[in-house]
Image (cartoon, rainbow, N blue to C red; front, side, top):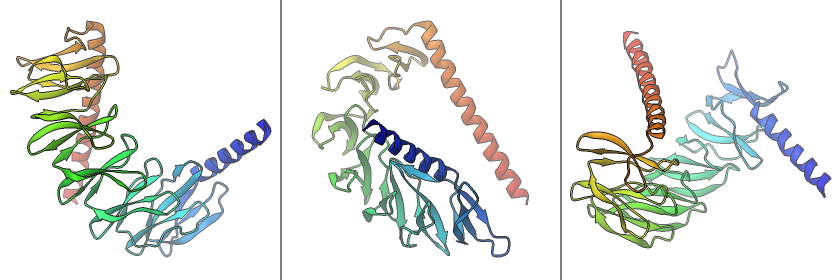
Length: 290
């Protein structure tokens, strides 16, 4: 039994390694794209007007998004077309599912090429936050599971992603929280809300932010001008009287060394964003000069 499992594992790793090395190439005469495998053999002839350089993989299966004429479809790593070419766009895969667009409506297709959800939504967030994804129709938001079943019908004005089994949703100008079955677990009493982290969520009331637990009990008073989610280290960044600081889950000033480390991480993130923004502006300026 152990030998069988080992052989199966090695086979899956070999398949994954091969698919990861699938290389796109372009025919010099036709300017169309095809794909070669890890040893240079052509697995998809150059017949596509565009194609991804990224091989999407999930649980041993793999595919590549390619464009034929003006429509997108999927091929597997053997070059077989596994969907019709009827999509205006195909997004990136996340846990084996990708959104696609037909006539401005969005659906979901899996990595085997099967359409899980027909093109009927205006927006699908993807399953980045667990087993449910937010979606919208006519500017109202709800949630679907991975089979396409509507768990929460589109009815909310705005939603965040699920965290710790609950999600903040907005209805008639107020925020509350529902669970993964759509049951209201915290009433719509707040002017703003963020996701739960470390068992607490920042919510706004009376023009100030405080923190509640998942029963809706006020844990930290409504005294902050701005309040962010708690990090895994158990501290949160807040602003009070115009000054930024870090606090722990009891509202006390966080350990200075830990706060300094988090501030350093934040500054690095901000610097990276600025660098990316500067590069984008440079590219746009160079494009305008052409």
